Image (cartoon, rainbow, N blue to C red; front, top):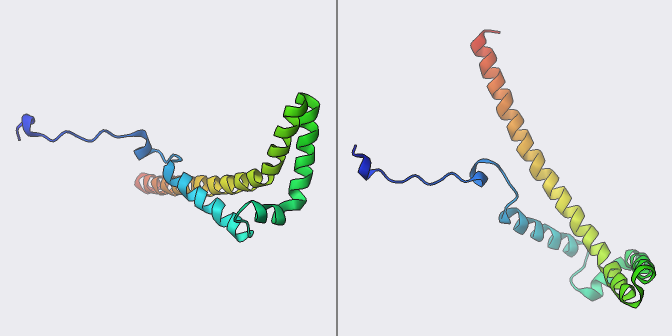
Length: 128
């Protein structure tokens, strides 16, 4: 075969070899967070307030106190807004951490199986 007629190879990307968190996992995570909020009955601000008011009020009060104590009126308003969003952020963070743990556990399990198979094969070759 003539060297001039060879097709160029596709370069191997790092993400093709090592499993990394890609946009596919981000999209799946977003769907899981939306499904979690849907299962909690949250589909807007009104339902968010009515479903999580027990968690929102202490978070808002803590945000108000910390914000007002450190940055005055601007901190008061920002603390209230952040306190209102904190329960949603905690739920989304929990779903993300759980998703990542399952993803990482799956990758580690597959690598453990590959290494066990290689170890078994090499032990069989050595005659043990």
